[in-house]
View (cartoon, rainbow over the protein chains, first blue to last red):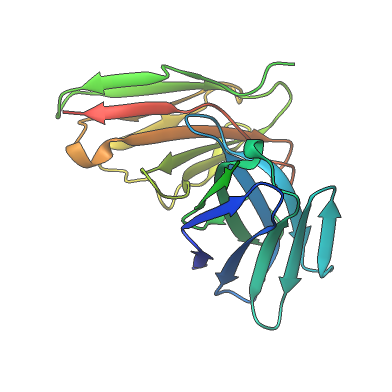
Length: 112
Length: 113
């Protein structure tokens, strides 16, 4: 089955700096890669996703890049703000559907 | 519009006791999922329903876990008997079809003593 690895497990940045979280996947058949944000004690919420027919997608301060050859994808957050502090999970699925395999999460802390 | 609703939010039980969790998906969402989230880990799929049919239950430990979605709307997840290792957050999610955006509930946190 699919295996998703995520790094780093914790990330601390200064407000206004950029943050990058990286994930690798094992199954070359995976073609859907969402990112979820989970605040403490709250539900995971989709923040951005990308499908394998594109290499990059951007939504305001967040962007995701995908390298199918290397089987890795990354989340980029620019101009970080304190409200960006949360755990971020990457995920991958085969067939573009919702049988998602999640990474282990990255605890992002944005410091003032 | 209400999101995915789960209850109870918290449950503390002793080992070997039964426990049940309830989920009400977003109206109109025919696909429903139960995920297990251990502390510091990502969610892991337990079971996926398309309407009332369980189409993927390969990760559900069937010796002690069971789930149902009798009318294709609400769902319950049961554990009997609970073990210490079952302490975790049980997340329910729904989507419009199997490729629609996944919406999670707040989760049910289980503590087994």
